[in-house]
Length: 103
Image (cartoon, rainbow, N blue to C red; front, side, top):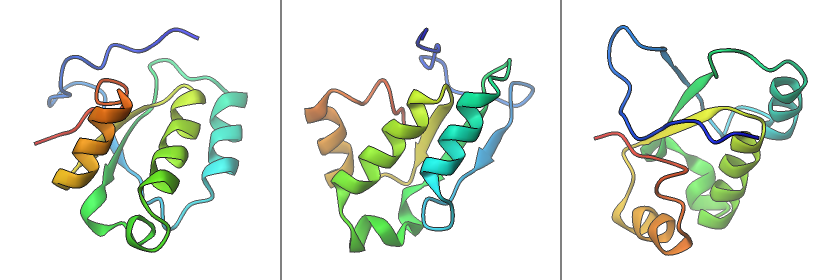
């Protein structure tokens, strides 16, 4: 699978970011659905990390695994309101380019 270009931040007029709440969606089912019907351009999701209950109840490793599962299905994920702890974890894991953050 080709890695999408996420080096440039999305701007108005580009593909819209769809809000995605990891607390309210079955990520495995969504990933299967997206992988079964590839779309062009690739869907782009925005995950607001400040509102994620699962980040506090299940931990960073759970959230990262869910995000990677979605990425494997061919979508682009942008993270917003990333805490310094989560940002450091993403950096240590080498995922800051795969899971870019919005200001």
